[in-house]
Length: 158
Image (cartoon, rainbow, N blue to C red):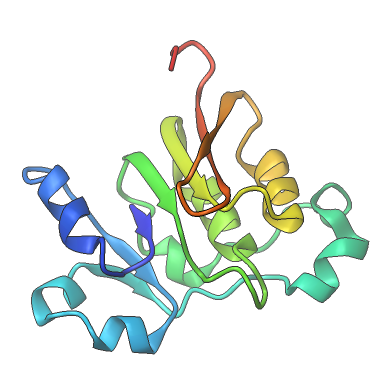
């Protein structure tokens, strides 16, 4: 499951030729630029963060309690996702908090999760609260000036 539909989408499809690959994209422009066969693999459209960046800080995930399920994410629940990649939304407006929370709803205890640009404060804090519990975490240089965090079951070495 990949939160992003972009120039690297063909690579993700080639890496998983016999498995189920779905994209979640919030940007109409990125969706429109894809060929129809890739648009058809977009499992959810319009996923929006449940909290915007301005509201997030005073609430913090700990004090906000459980958030309501995201309707766009609920349609992806019946699948047991082995890998979830969070590389969208772009992170500059409301950030990736909605995608992080949706990934927490969709991941099992065995799911490996990658969060790009996890050096951003809001993303890092939300990931630590919603994704890292019971998981090991490793930060990896993402090659474009930031970090990608890999969260994986604690009993699995990386």
